[in-house]
Image 1 (cartoon, rainbow, N blue to C red):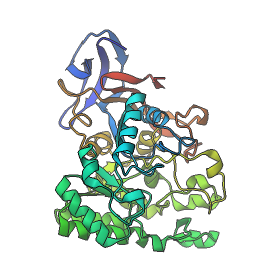
Image 2: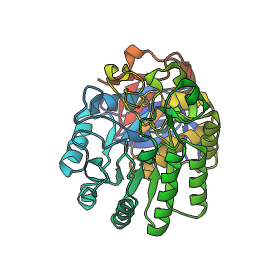
Image 3: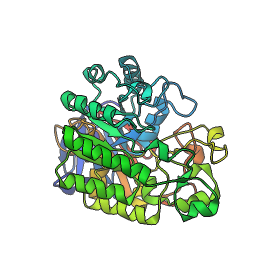
Length: 426
């Protein structure tokens, strides 16, 4: 779409401003914010919020190596439909993202799709095996600012300390998947009375909390930045809260499914509800929501994890963990009613952009001179999932049959619409 674009009659939400105006976009940037603006193309935003585009710190796009589940193009399209303009691509691909060649491939595939900014993360350890460090300096020179072995926690405390020391010198952030693997072997669901009744192996909360505690203390002695992925327990929130109170450079995220789904759902033995870390208790959910409200948790991230249908239809103990998240995140979070709309924009746009170190182009206020990476969403629209219309190649969503609230109407990436009236560009 060439020429200027005007988003009409939307309510912009910025850090210090909220008002109904038009937004004019030219040459990839916001050109003007005001009343009665004219442009070559007009997009109606009546009754909608206009914000900076969402940034997902935690998306599994599967390419290279697992394209049957998702490709960078299909994942990017799902992201655009969810209001995202940037996705941090997790490194558990095949081959993993532990070399410049793979990082460059992921980045170029994202550019080829042209729907969102695909930001490849790098592995902390070679092959995500937890045995030796990946070439972090080389990857950092190639533009990687976010490193994780997501799917695996780095089990060796000495190796993790060394990684943090390198990260501090490089000016990059490490993101930890907090799981002490010795405590979760064979586990299927949260360790609770429910799992005993169901006869399913339990996944104890302490497996997450021990690593959260360990890495907070490693941050304390190294001074490096640390981001905690998909926190799921009350005690994890308390540990991060205490660390922040001590002034440590730590941040944390929570997923929409850990805010909305509880352990009892595994009583159906349906693998669609199997996820890592597992769904927890209602008390954990309340603690996570409290962490959002008081600033302990900085971001909402999807942990979008597509799997082929045949894999998710295996028995509960054999099926891989993971759920789709990109297209439903906003609708789930708004339906939960845990936060005000302005806070949701902070948690899904401003804060994650800063954590990912892409806040010069994403998560910026809707203001003249800033890059036009924008999301327009109707916060009141209720809807349900049509599984045949998902943009993802996979269909493992746990929200079938649920009413979601709030849906993206338009998404603008680098000044061009990728979604118009809820329809993604092909």
